[in-house]
Length: 403
Ligand SMILES: *Cc1c(COP(=O)(O)O)cnc(C)c1O
Image 1 (cartoon, helix red, strand yellow):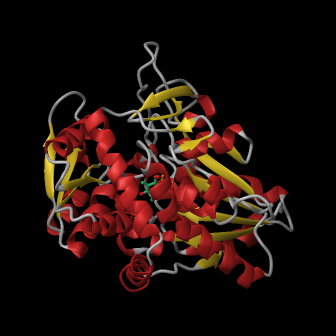
Image 2 (cartoon, rainbow, N blue to C red; image 1 turned 180 degrees about the vertical axis):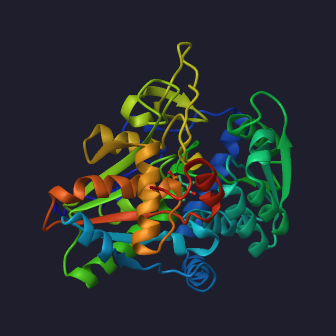
Image 3 (cartoon, helix red, strand yellow; image 1 turned 135 degrees about the vertical axis):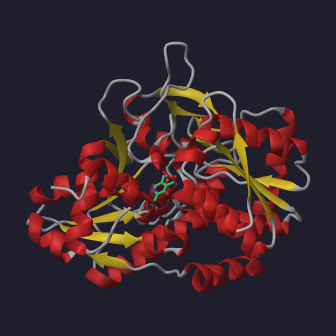
């Protein structure tokens, strides 16, 4: 490695939140001021040893970190090729990687003297993780959720309420994620002094893509060390599913300065026609959405297109700006996996290894299973971003118990 160069994570983004031409902050003035304050507070505590110690303690004793890496010996034997390893983010408290950044955001809100955390949620995963953080830190929590999603995701609505969050039904427009974002932003603007908008992925205006990545980087830092200890070398390929891109940026962060191939797996849904998938990097073009410049899927009017994936956590018409950048400089590869392939991997991991994965994570696994047979002697590390408990009713209703 070139020793004159800053490590990647220190070099990107720049002070304005740019990863190359992607990122930045495209928001009204009143929000820009808040983002500036959040950025300053974050830069302050990120260097502070008390904050770092507190976050370490939370990760170890509340979240259950470090999560293990597991060698999927049955799958590896069956597919007769590359060794398949899983980073077990499904074992995180609340069942997914999202708590990694929600606890960080909660701690930051507490430090800034905020009283309330506000966010939107689609399927309810981010809402549950944030409500958990709010309960831990003694903060109020307000989660905006479309009425369509409330009807669909009943167990997560119950979880959020049990955790003490207020669930605000959003009843305009399509009554799903996009409207929930609008509604949450409106609520935030009413009281930006006492509340903090907590974004659920590496998206949104600066500093969120950087901050969420930094909080998620623990996944990659642990993985680097664990993989070396386990096998004596680094993996050849690291892959992760990409919705907004937080779990992928988390694990990629641990290997970005190494000679390791990094692959983001996007949801191909029902096919490559616009509206049938949510593969933003694969099929999208440059554009501004939700306060940042990135690659997005647009309709004929240039508005965010409607998207589909069987995994509701991957159902987003854009992607974090850092992914757009890393793909544009060819540091990462991007590929797609269909609904059908993801569901097949879901059944496979459940039955063969005894681990029921989230349908989101099943996309990354499906990619590993696809390439493993031709890569004998290599090692693939899959970020298993979450567990599938939330998905079992949906899967069984729509696909039975597999073949
Ligand atoms: C939300 C979610 C995702 C997608 O979000 P990213 O920001 O792309 O990581 C992936 N897996 C699980 C289990 C999720 O809950």
